[in-house]
Length: 217
Image (cartoon, rainbow, N blue to C red; front, side, top):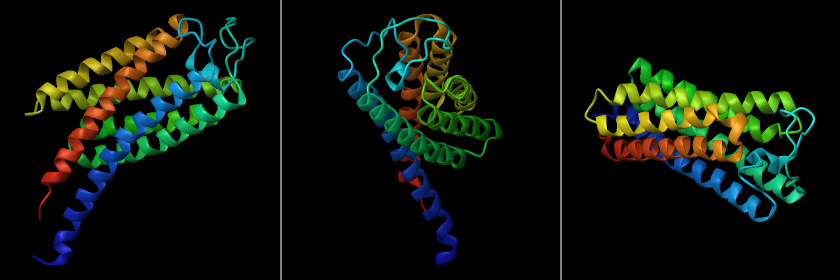
């Protein structure tokens, strides 16, 4: 076997490894940014605030809901930077996801996941006071990430990874439930959706790393 023949295997192995690492890192960075920012905002209340309030508050337009002011320059920098970096890493994760399985539905799920990751970057780029782009990016992220996971789960359930598929399906449903409650339970709903999406990314990242370790010419 020539080096030309081996190169596609090397590419796949490197891509899946990179994507798996980026996926796990994206979750760690996004969650760490939130927790760190909250530590600088003692008045933050998950039942009263949206997590995005840490980037600024728009009382007049964002559902006309009054809530504690929790943002500072520090919280804005931490959250926005963390989310942008995490979103970029999640895009790399989605690219690996696309190449991890050639099934059309799986790849469509990977595309949705990638678009959701791009929307997550948008949440960091457009903080809450930039009302319309922020709202569009927020709902786009949660919806596309959840739908992407459901498509991927549908494929996995019909493979030897059916248990993983069932877990991914449950996490996708959890993410959708959280998304449906965003207007009502605020930070709690965001936490539910983030839990679903984050765990899904970690599990699929671990799956890619396992596949990468088995790639041989």
